[in-house]
Image (cartoon, rainbow, N blue to C red; front, side, top):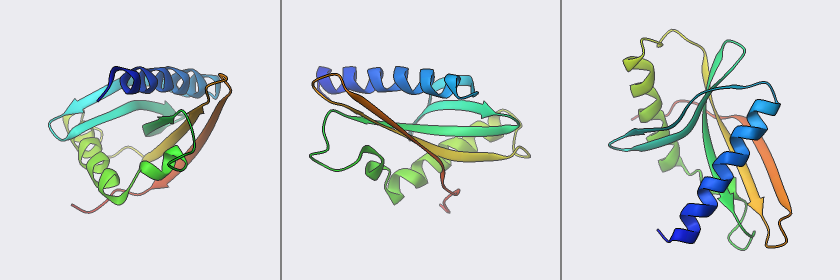
Length: 124
């Protein structure tokens, strides 16, 4: 991955954290990593544990950022979330998967779209 793409992703995650905090979310952890990948943000909204995938693009040339959360990506996120819940003895907690979709245009106009409860745990 190029340095520009990494920087864009990090900027998007920072914007997403700020956005979620402004909307009452408490951030628990960022970049929870496992062998199969990572969850960008784990947060709480009320009593609900929220696993957040952040997708950031600098144009809509290849579609909306949230469109990159494919079935395969959902399955990967489900596995990582289950690992987190198991390791932290949280299997009885209510949880959901959200996507924060961000477009940062070259003129620094930023659009942030929050899609709560985008998908359910996927069978694996």
